[in-house]
Length: 474
Image 1 (cartoon, one colour):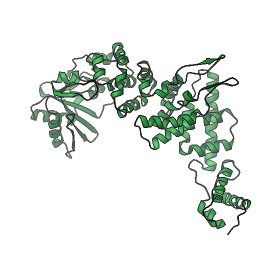
Image 2 (cartoon, helix red, strand yellow):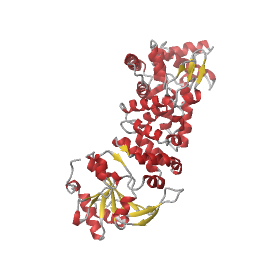
Image 3 (cartoon, one colour):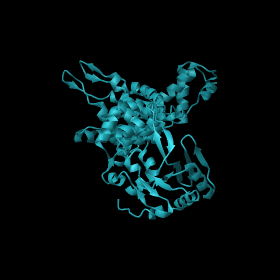
Image 4 (cartoon, helix red, strand yellow):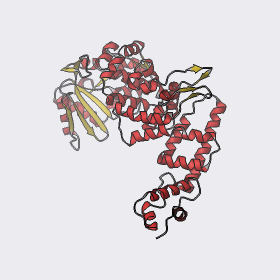
């Protein structure tokens, strides 16, 4: 927070071009929002620039584009009064200074022209209201009417207007507050937290796509549990992920208790965030236990059970993705697969690991076996150091076995050494159930270690199996 000379921080020619273009139009222009915030925080400089013009942002964008090499296209969004230019690594958004007023049932505002101060007032948080002048008379000067610099120093998320107005007007800001608190490790002002709690139902007017965008950004943070805990304490989480909040709580019957699977899940997500940036693997960590709520049962003989919770959870993943308008493609299938298989390595790590069991794991997980192991290692949340070391060491054994089996048997992207066409040709068969039986038998023999995953042993096994089925070579 030692930076004081903002003029020196705007040395890139893009700022001079914007300033000159605004002068041509006889309007004032300012860099505002995230770029300024990150500049003052001395974070990696953002390549996203928001420019506010006291006049037409669209006209300003067009003149700027005409002065840039390559004459980049100007994307105009008339409904919002904004324009966007993508130039080299920059993404520059232009907007005219405006005031906004909202109706109760929509986050889309009625927009009117306004002053710079009007535009700063309409923004979500004080740390995003700060503007730096691009005008000749005071180029580089910071305009901070809501003490954003002070809030940066105090690591505080605060709204420029009364928080109840800010959040009621645009309820997505409730999630943005939580996301910024998670990304920056800031605190949310107490009355702001209270306003989120009071306005939580308003989140229902926000599109699922916008909600997922914020959830993804929270999950992408170094410690996602910060945001997840805030979503929980502000009571937003049941509106977003009821499958998750259903996991909270501990029941006790006849002295038998189960762990609180909600808080355990948050630990798992933090653990996996330390080892991978894969967003969809982080989603898998978040959802890996959601099947435990509907499958929870108490058995007098063995205590609490969650029978087939992985299978049930994988089915729930599809419904959750569909409800949130998330991609129902290979990403969803990956999360389903991870949830469905989430206990497999754990079971292996508790026994003497057999090659056959490891082969089946590698065969079923395929190219995702490393991701699955990463998820299972993140699932170790015991506070008992002895148990933790034991589990970690067991997983090391499993990983080593996977390497050995994979090197020898090449099962990760398994292709049968003998094709159905070759079986038909060898025994002069037309399409029939015998072909499937022989193919399955070869696969099982490879997985059980009876034969190597190679052509010659597989061919001999095929002949042997064919004879058992009463088939004769051509």
